[in-house]
Image (cartoon, rainbow, N blue to C red; front, side):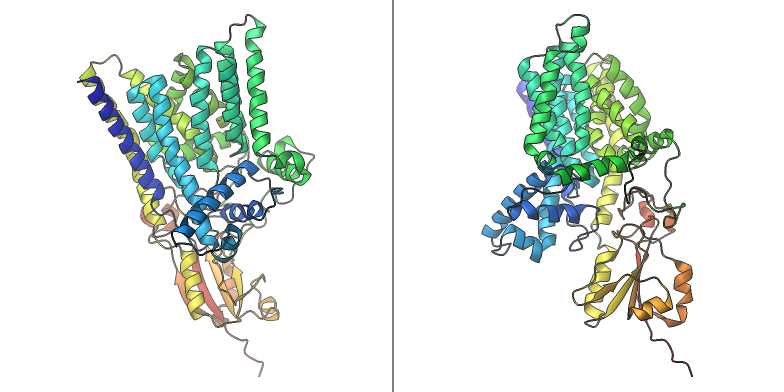
Length: 553
């Protein structure tokens, strides 16, 4: 086969993988809209982008770096302007669009995440081909393209997919450091890591493998090799790139306080003297059957390995990951070593926190894909060309089969109308204007609540006759789910049975709901497994009319 024909085939294969990645990330990108709270944090991020659009660049926001907010605003502003030129969006500014049609702007911010996820797949193929060979590049790209948690988080207006793109870029620019540490390579690596940190703070952990490669590629002797001057230059470049793009952390003490509160929330055991209101879910509210806090660091590691990785990349990949990590540490390939160190450091740190969310693992998926692809291609290298090709094809199909199926099932469910949206639609069509509505079932977070239509008045009242009557409640909307954030007080509801008239019911489950598998600490009402028990996203929602109390005879 000629070299040019081989290159065409490789390009066609890479393009096919990117196309699959795009299809999985664009499908049902509008899930849950126009409801703004079907994915935690999206509404907060959307509203945060309104500040720079209004000329206020001091965000006073610390959940995610301000660079991510600025990027989201810039992308949303440009996309909104383009749609205005096409006549799709009305002639109003970005801030006005958030006020009048926020769901359309939220869709644009989701588009940014989807494009970032797709770009991560394409870039991963390129850097892995360069460092580990053509077959490894295609396998790594295929693994990332179909990974369920990467597909899932590429649907959300959140920074996880963009951080994964930053991880791919950083691993790609740092790999040459292992072959020789130059000033340009060190500064370039630091700058890319700083930009990745601007998407999400944990990208700072990329400095660990980058420093290791600086040591590996250093010409120094003895202790000087472990403390390379260009390694310090890299750290300074990373800090400058981050601070220049996220200046809010410097100029605003309120932002620094919010960042500290996030650190305390994620690692409360490291700050025993600091009290953070809301840092833990009140035990009187949380159902222990639906939310279990880790009892030890091993519980955290087990969650990320046995749950997030198991459902995010599939059982076979999960079983091979320890072997792939070992291969990455001993293979003498800079990209493999950097990937292994990044995964290990992140895994150990994330598992030490009681905040267990599978999306924390999403930016690690590209590094895991590199290691698995390198392991497979290395394992079959000694076989003949034809046998090696068949073996790699069979192994790749075995690895991507389960996560591809899970991603397809996930997107299929997302394409169905969410129960919260169905409820809002019913209320808008059937609720008389000016009615007072109580919502029951909310625990700690309100992500499971349907949005009330304009004109309805929401009250927060316990399910007690006196409290409801005192608040003038005429309707009660309940939501219940396997997730801790939607737990209905059934006994209190039963006490009101003689006054309740069920007017509407919206059910996501079609079988025993216990078969569905959810990320328990994340208020995300779409499963990662047990898809046959679920028909659509959202909690079980009931709409009751509260009849007036019968007057005493």
